[in-house]
Amino acid sequence: MRNKLLCHTTALALSLLLNCIVQGQVQKIYLNPKAAGGESQSKFIDSLRFISLQKPDNVNIDESDNLTIAKSYFIIVQYLKKKLLFYKKDGTFVKQVSYKKLGNGFVDFYPFYNEKGNQITFTGQNKNYTLTQKDNIKIELDPDNPKNRKYYKKYVIDLNDTSFTLKKSTPTTNDISGISYLFDDDYYSQNKITTSNLYKDSIDYELKLYKNSTLIKQYFPYNHIKEPRYLYTTNYVSAPKSDNPHQRFVTRPYNDTIYVLTKDSISPAYQIILPLENTLPPYFFTTPFKNKTERENFQRNNGWLLNQIYNWIETRSHILFIVGFQSNSGNYIYSKKNKTIYDIRKIKADSSSFGIKVFPDYNTIYEDSLFYTLFSADAIRRDFKPNAAKATPKALENIIKTKSANEAVIAVFTLKAN
Image (cartoon, rainbow, N blue to C red; front, side):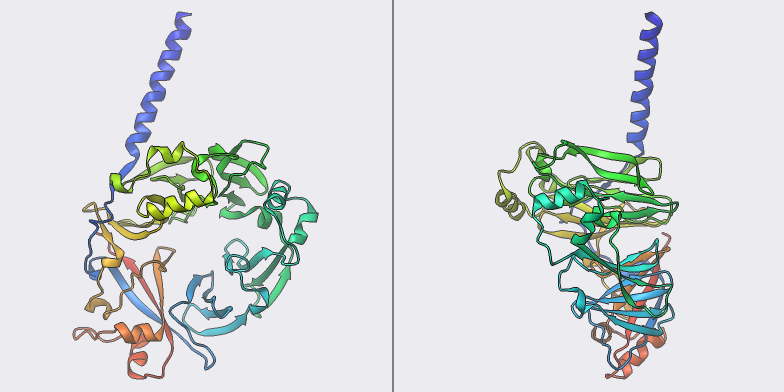
């Protein structure tokens, strides 16, 4: 009996020690949204270059267009026009593809790049059917049923085929379940968080990992029927890529911790420490909202309380991230060297970048240790300022000298190492 007690005591002490070690590894980053200041852009960016995107006569690129980076192409998503523009990585125009026939819904049939298959995919509900919440839950609980495929439509553009033909495809179980590619070796994740009294099982998990189609890990349990923080809304765990292809950063709704996820484990890595005025009150996690209207009123009346952290990007010297508050947001960059957070909206362009702010608020893409930002010709003309000490890059020169030129430009850069 004494040996068992000794073993139990030793195990408990070891557990507490390991817990302390893990907690000690979590780096605290202090953010006061009101106090986050600005700085000159040249303090951060390095190796800046501009790529000119060739423009055919019937193509115009606007400031509302978005950039997607595929394996071999730059892709401009013109969502308002329902068009895709394909470019080689040197800026040579390849093809324009219209997808107007797929409909007008923003979420349904929005073009997403499928890294695993090297495809652009469009998936949405079949408009010939009107699904209730109960219908959707039944489908969600039985995604392998072939009969459920009729409620969805899917189209693909295979980027391995240079014809870029928009083709009809068959929705898969992953499409219906919202399971997305995560790591090599066929690892996938499901990260949708919902509540409903239509679920029979009260326990679900915010994040689920699959190997092929087999569930292998589940993290962060919650009450699938009546979890107070998730009532009358739909949330998602965010899992942006990192420079390590075998790990992802994970952020959760209403949580200030950033986790590192691998194929085998998940562990806390950072914690954003906010002032009390930006921190959710304890009752938010324990007292359920009475209805959707009460929840919406809470969001409107508490616009600067934490909602979720997004787009976590870590380089050797800096961390970039977005904080979504209840009805506001902020875009920040953290210097590891001086442990200071800057508000990206307050960072000013200078002569080193010819007056062009390559750090826009939200649409900079990070891929393979490089940052990419798309600019229309109008935006370049509006912001350009000559640098007496530096020659104007050719990608900018033609736009500045020729008012009729409408070539878009992609700024490519890294961050300084200190």
